[in-house]
Length: 116
Image (cartoon, rainbow, N blue to C red; front, side, top):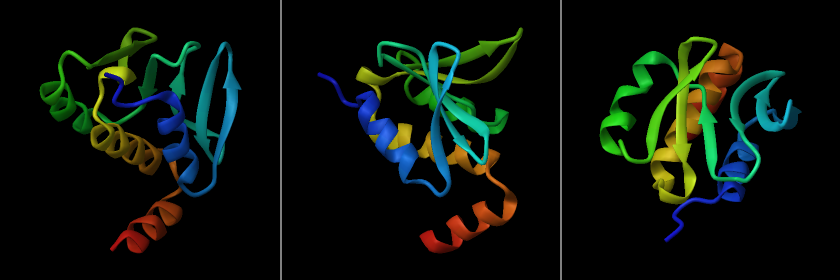
């Protein structure tokens, strides 16, 4: 059973303020003011989400068969999510955290204020 599809993750990412989708080599990337916060390799099976260190451990514990550390350039840079086995609330939370991390502080603050 497919819980999350790339189109669902795309729709969520694109709903965030000032997000663009642009090519990144053979991947697609989601950016806020030019800064990448998530990428998707071809095929739509995975989503790479660039969350901070402190936002990685809980998802890794909650869904270890679905979420793994994303190694890039010899360092852990985020999380690799197997979309078809992932739960949308977790994917949504990770996308929003990654967006907040890359968005300008004032834009992220306005987003947080609008959610309250």
